[in-house]
Structure formats: structure tokens, C-alpha cells
Amino acid sequence: MKKGEYKLKKQIFRNLCRFLVFILMFSCFFVFGKKVSANENQNAAPIITYYRLNGNDITIQWKAPDGVSYSKVDIYSATSPNGSYRYENTVSGNSYTNTYVAKGVPYYYKLEASYEDNEGYKTSSVNSFLVAANRFFEFMGWYEFRVKTFKLQKEVFMPESNELSKGEYKQLVETALGNGKIRIGMIIQTICATGIRVSELSAITVSSVKSGMATIYNKGKERMILIPRDLQVKLLGYTRKQKIKHGIVFKTSKGKAVDRTWIWREMKKLCDIAGVERKKVFPHNLRHLFARTFYSIYKDISKLADILGHSSVETTRIYLKESYIEHQKRIEKLNLII
Image: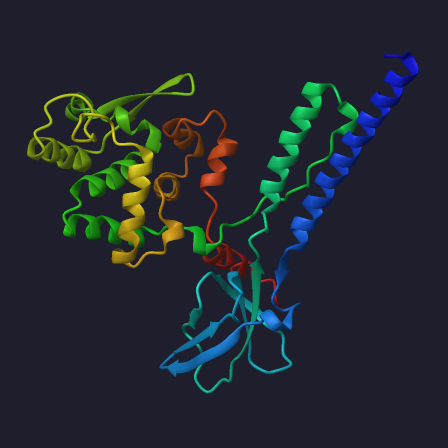
């Protein structure tokens, strides 16, 4: 191949790569354009179907037009049609109840719904795609093709719709035990009462239950976790009833440790019976509940990081995001309105 011909083909190849990068970036921006507010598209705006005053509670219900599925609905209220609308809550369902409303005061509501079609992605997901593309370009030595990721500001509080409450946790456990699903009921309690990861469940052995301590090996680190006395008693009773004399406590009929897929599936099955939203119920949310409960009592983030096996307390902070309701209470206590 002649030198000039080689240079030409090389230039064509480089231009092709630039074109592909352009398409990638354009696609990412196009994806963002798929996320829209129903208020910007009146054909997708919520349709109020029910409105009722019951004592000091007002309940409203709505539906989405055909072909539209809302990812969230923000609720605002005011005491006059042209007044200042105050943010009330964000929900993922199709109804909302406003409690403790003042008698004799008219209330007006505004709903802001957000939806995305099947091609929509979260900003964090798009960033993951871009990072993967950048790694490929670096591997190939095409450093000039690297693209910047989108900047994300940390959320101050967690949407209440994503948070598993202690009451909902109790509902899940009681539903499991009441329906004969003893194993998944004990697994849920074990994860939530110790704060372990679902992948660390195999560390709960008969000998560790008897001693009240379990040694966790994960990510090249070793840590010791304590098994609460009440859980210890329940697990000992479970092993006796299941005739498990040694080894892993939670295992299949073939003696293998139960896998996370089975645990995930069984937890989701409980949702419909217990009346708990499915998106709130997954093993890692039990770990989050443990973290929030521990911190609310002891206020020791360093100790909590050690228990959870975190190398940095910054990771632990993610677990401790307060709900919108708690955050709002803190803001209200500032009393800065004259």
C-alpha cells in the first residue's frame, strides 16, 4: 500500500470515529429530550377523577391519558386559585391524601406529572454509557475522542416513594410468617437486623448463630458483625425446626446457599400480599433501613461505616439521606418567614 493511500485511509477511519462519537453524544442529548413534564404537553396532563373531603382529610385521584405512564407526580396546593402554590409531596401512584387541612378553608391543587417513554434514561445511566465509551477510547489511544460526563448535584433528601419504612418492613415480615414463608421471613429479618449485604448472607452459619458473631469476608476485607440476641434465638429455633445442624443457615434442599435471584423474587411476591409498593422492596433497602435506624439512635456515622463495611463515611452518608417529610420538618423549624 502506498504511503499516500495509507494516510488517506487512516484519515477516513479517524473521521468515521469522530462521526460515531458525534452520534453517541447526540443520542445522549436526544435521550434527555425524552424526559418531559406532562404540564409541557397538555395531551399528557393528569385527569382528575376523584375528589373527596373526609373530616380533616382531602383525597384526590387522577389518571393518565391513554398511552402515557407517569414516573412521578408532584402535588402542590394553595388556598386561592391565583395564590402561591406550596409543594406538598411527590408520589408514584394515582392518588394523594392531604391530612390536617383547616376546616372552612378552600384548597386548590396543581399536579405536575413527569413521564418518560421506553427510550428514556436517567442522567446517571447516560454518564455510565459515556464513561464506558471513554474507557474504550483510552484503550484504543484515541484520547481526543473522549467526552465529558454530565454534572450531577447530590440529592439533599430521598424521595419518600423510594424509602422502605419500619412499618412496611414489619408488614413484609408478618405477611411472610403468616403465609408459611418462614425462610424468606427469616432472611428479611437477618439482613435488616444485622445490616449485611445479601451477598454476605452465607456468612450466617449454625456456628456463628450459636456464638452470636459472624465473620464477613468481602472486597478483600474482613469484619465481625454481631447477631442480636432476639435474632439469635429465632435463628436457633429455625435451624432446629429445619434440622440444620451445621453449615449455612439459609440453603436450598440441595444444600447450596440460596441465591439473590430467589431472595429478590420471593420478596417481590410478598409485596402484593402485604400491600407494600414493589419498587421499595429489595434486599439492599433492608440494609438502608438498618443504617437509618442505627444512626437515628446512636448518631455515630464512623461506627456505622465500620458495621456496614464501608471504607469511607461518604458512602455511608448515602444511606442516611432523610426523607422529604423529615427534611421539610427541619426547614420549617428555621422560622425565617416574618
